[in-house]
Amino acid sequence: SYDLTQPPSLSVSPGQTVSIPCSGYELVNKYVCWYQKKPGQSPVLVIHQDTKRPSGIPERFSGSTSGDTATLTISGTQAIDEADYYCQAWDSNILWVFGGGTKLTVL
Amino acid sequence: QITLKESGPTLVKPTQTLTLTCAFSGFSFNDGSVSVAWVRQPPEKALEWLAVVYWDDDRRYSPSLKNRLTITKDTSKNLVVLIMTNMDPVDTATYYCAHSADSGWAFDSWGQGALVTVSS
Image (tube, rainbow over all chains, first blue to last red):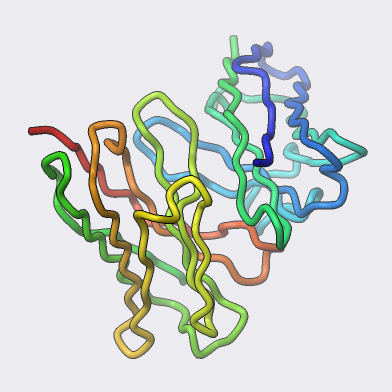
């Protein structure tokens, strides 16, 4: 089976930049996306195809992938960005695989 | 605007079969290159992909749950149904249906979720 590894938790001060890593074997060769998940709400796609932001997602969200690691970066983090973030990878062999999620605390 | 909504029982007993329905609007399987998937999230745990049905009726399942899952679509009614057999308390989760089309196999729209509790 294919595994994606994320740190369980991270914290950031308001206005600062935070990077959330996601590691998996040859992740650069897969489609990678990121979701924001707040308690009691459905997941929201914030990055797809490694670097693309869906319409309506603030510019402070960006993504990159290199080698075995994908990274979600939030610049100028705001209190409303406090949430769980999940990476997800796809290719025709593994299909859809989610990471374990990272709880982001803004304090 | 794409919307999806899950429906089904909130409580099932161990060993029973769960049937969940996803009713959607704003797109059609006739559009081509569309898929609808089921994803679940147990309390305090991570998201888990379960199954997907493509516009051409191809279906794929999570390897770990493949033997218990069936996914079907009704193109004329804009419905997708997930059947999960032999339910267990560890299957207690919020079950989501989600749409994928033009975002590199990402799920760009999600339903509100349906909480299913497995308990005797």
